[in-house]
Image (cartoon, rainbow, N blue to C red):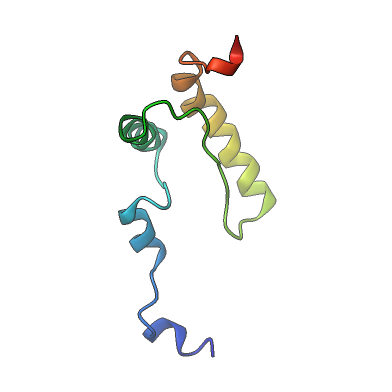
Length: 83
């Protein structure tokens, strides 16, 4: 029953962001969070970028800024498979 969901104590988006399940924010914050993940999991080479129910125009806009602002910071690190 969707009317009961708000009172059911289910995790919110904010809860998931606090736990690290979602990354939200400006490029600097995303870069910082990815660096924390790299420190926690040395040798990580890939991450999945995904969206919840988001309009395609918003996804494209966000992927563009991710590609321009975030990925270049990590591109120079390369991967063992790039050789």
